[in-house]
Image 1: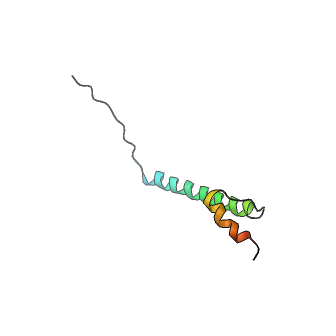
Image 2: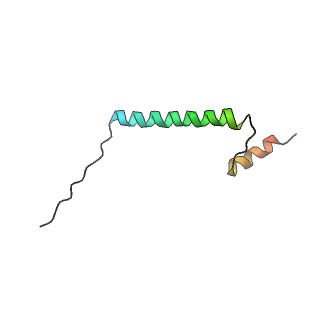
Image 3: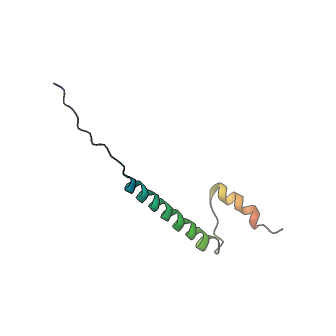
Length: 61
């Protein structure tokens, strides 16, 4: 006799998908506002390739 495993499927409703997109959109807006309002005015540097790409733009002409 083989025992059947009961599995519960996660069903996504339209409301849950909209909620996820709203949270992601809000998080993106907060992150971009933080970058614009805090990093740029205070001349903080970015790391990695983004930082290397921004370095030439800060050099005097």
